[in-house]
Length: 388
Ligand code: NAI
Ligand code: SOE
Image 1 (cartoon, rainbow, N blue to C red):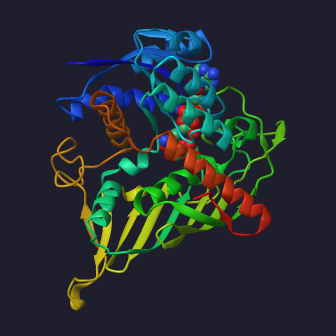
Image 2 (image 1 turned 45 degrees about the vertical axis):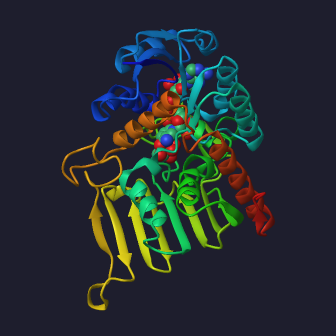
């Protein structure tokens, strides 16, 4: 069976998720399109890189991503580092002829995203941006129902991404709160997942009318590089620095096909953990999804008899998208790992079959344009068009 050698840059939270996906993918998708080989992992120093290699099953490790990109043995560069590094690594990887999967958001700015898109197009390599939540089977099922016309013409999309890991002011100022590293706050970090849902399920967003807030103006400086995501709180008299990114955004949206809707995202919503949701209303029915109950898609169809019409729950399983590869009984439990395994499968299949995969760098670029429009609208108080 064909193999593809992966160099993964970054050994933090997403390093763990992507390694699991490479290891698990052939166990779920068999025969696999190709076997991903965990060849080399890179982190900022040898100690961290070696630890990542031992833990995540990579044959080699390095603290120099530039040298690894030049390695002729490597087929795929997997970028799982903070956002400030995505553009430089991806552009160099494209120039070296490697296929690239990058974590989201694609880049800190639209200019960086545009340069990344140009580089992969010029090199003719395969590219993907890791908005994995759309690969939750219930979300893919929603897409299937929409394409089949089961809910008719879409009128409205309501999407949220609510978390609380940084609601505590003592949750530290990690790289996710620094504009120079992250590019933006909640907007790039989590609202982009909802924008991806909106574009995937409804269509292109043409216009936004947004607001943005930073509730906690300064936070304790975090020691160490990898983000602990609020798991370690500062105590006592600690040094604090200003937060220069958004804590919360909300926006109205208009779609190319005439639908309207709203997107809200915050990391300050006590009690909400990974409350990534959508509700879509069409002229023949409605769909509703909450990632915290990710085996379930709520559906309501207008042609159900009057006396039994209402939301009912479909538990995803073998009859649904990727069901044959996953678990043999509905509701055994889809996890975050499975979304990454499906993502790894679809990316590797696109390389083997020479097809385009989505979401790719074009989608990442468009999401960046829409994100900029939200901030511009928040500053001006006016509707802002997104260039389509
Ligand atoms: P993290 O802070 O847990 O880990 C980042 C790792 O990259 C650390 O080990 C750090 O030492 C390393 N690193 C930093 N600069 C490097 C460099 N120049 N060369 C090599 N290694 C370097 O970060 P996390 O949470 O894994 O985030 C990484 C990316 O993944 C971000 O873009 C983030 O937005 C995205 N992400 C996506 C998620 C999703 O659901 N799709 C979930 C979490 C993060
Ligand atoms: C933190 O908000 C975070 O890890 C995001 O970076 C991810 O994209 C999201 O999926 C989970 O939460």
